[in-house]
Length: 79
Ligand code: SF4
Image 1: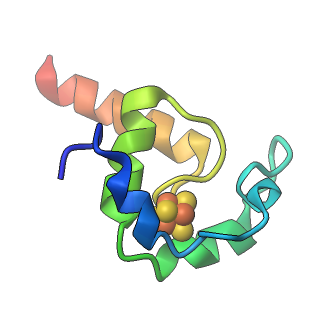
Image 2 (image 1 turned 180 degrees about the vertical axis):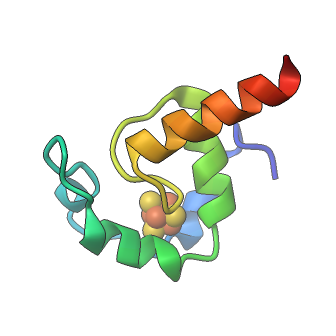
């Protein structure tokens, strides 16, 4: 599924949850949000969506910091 197709979010484990959980204060891990992600069937699609759009907060089972590391690693692979 292409990340540009947002239909995946209909199956999101976080659907209906408080979105503030997914935007923890700077430096906080967002453990409760990550718990939803760990049992989410669309985690991969969500992660690619967030990587593509440089979203902040918890997406696809990752924190913003972790996604920055993924983007850097991918950039190194392409270099
Ligand atoms: S991976 Fe996490 S943030 Fe993404 S849809 Fe699933 S529960 Fe929500």
